[in-house]
Length: 115
Length: 110
Figure: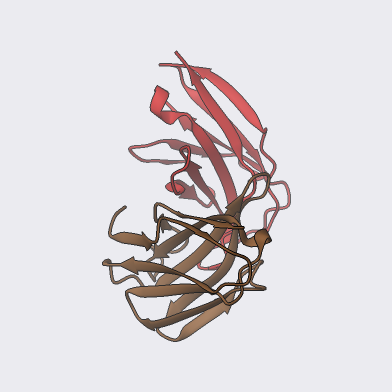
């Protein structure tokens, strides 16, 4: 997907365990995002990043943390996974500047199941 | 950001034009209209956006009414591969918090 890779693509874990999802881009885009998608809710923004070490919360950030130590990687961490965090997680990237504003390119998604 | 209203589902015959409406009656002057689509189990895909003029690209056309309170996404010759959920989003340019609603599920009928 246009230089954006999510890993793992599928993961099953148990309640209370930590989980980290990785988003890797080769486009050198400034902005990176994490969304979750659940039936009946569409996509909801968890966190986003507007540069290395610069992150901000989205609408459903509770229970999640993120880190961006280099331009190409944006990590989403569930410190202690709960069943309510069972979802499909999508990473997205976008360029800075007027031409790229709000034009997101999405990854293929990571399906997480918390038992 | 202004709220949008879309029909939950629509059908269109293959080869015909698919016209997807979106109501955004509370849109403000500096908010743009964006369209994305999501084909089953894939990540969403950007289609087109505009402020007040009609826009066209290789994927679709966007028609925005003069009062900007509604818009229509037009897929000129729908194919089976256009079956997807289509999202209409209204947002200030550069606001990173792009919010997706539940969209319109478009089914192309052979």
